[in-house]
View 1 (cartoon, rainbow, N blue to C red):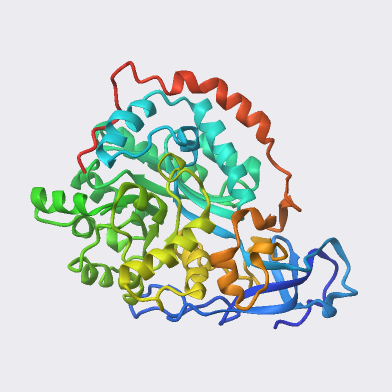
View 2 (view 1 turned 90 degrees about the vertical axis):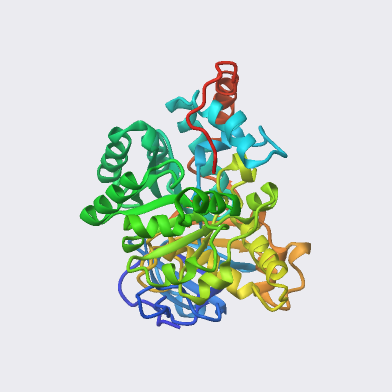
Length: 470
């Protein structure tokens, strides 16, 4: 443990908790020689009993014992007895405004879901709907212990304002298609440069081409050059499912991952959403990437669409971070990263036919430190270690469904629920305390959003923003 800080009053002291820590107290982890930083190979996390966390200036200043801080002056103290302290969960790929479409199009194959429902409705999007949807999504994530999310959507200035007001942390990208011409790519760059560092530094940004099947090779290559020139991450969908990979091979003779490689996108920092269509032939390509490449996995949506799952084991073995995600609530129905964590462990066991893979500790590693690396913030969040941003959640362990506790990792992954999160903290600021949301008014948001829904879901115009062919 780090010693109790000795200088001046603290901003916040959390006492009496059981703290999740990674083996290396600095948060540094091992990766392969090309520079990927992915988390301990065994996914080991440990727990410190009767721990205290000291926060100053938005950062964790020390992790010590409760007794060591008994006399430490603090502006705010939280007694967390009976609770686990975790790094805030990270939703590595979502479309927050799509909560407005939750449950609207169910039990459909992907092409019908997109072409007959989602893309016609998205042609009705207004900035007001985006703003309200993003705010509702932020409230849902705060309640569920998500402190940071990566969003890829439209009208992203409205999402940025929701992030600022909610107190969350986010990586935001303005999505574009090649059908928009050069203006789409230019707008994505302009947003990324203008909003980078906003919300007191809590907003980072990405370039956000939609996917290789909606963005042509020239646009992908130009995006790679812009990312390199401006030091930006790229966030896009690729190899979303096996059908997309088959179609790419039939049309281009290359998998979607090989398309990204040829465009230079594996030589910059890139976050690939889904990757359930990644093939064995893609693994050497990914291993040789010179950029920081990561994959975001959202297993609930794959189950709903009848897709394969992200090859987490194969990616982990070559040093590619796999972060956890929910995708948008239109396909996933929730923004619950706890559910993504549990499903990742269960689906991986089923897919690999190996009950020893993926363990609860590995699942916690993916939900925290690997997810932090995936969104480009591996040095800032994802670990309860001195110097990291104070993104912390407190989880109630006293409920009948979490008792008794024989293995705390198993309890957190397989028994705890998002509703067990009692307190959510970002940059040392309490956004939810004892289950009370402090930064957003949910009834007001819901009332205003409901008034917008009739115009939003009208598909009688027959338009759609794109055609889904995979």
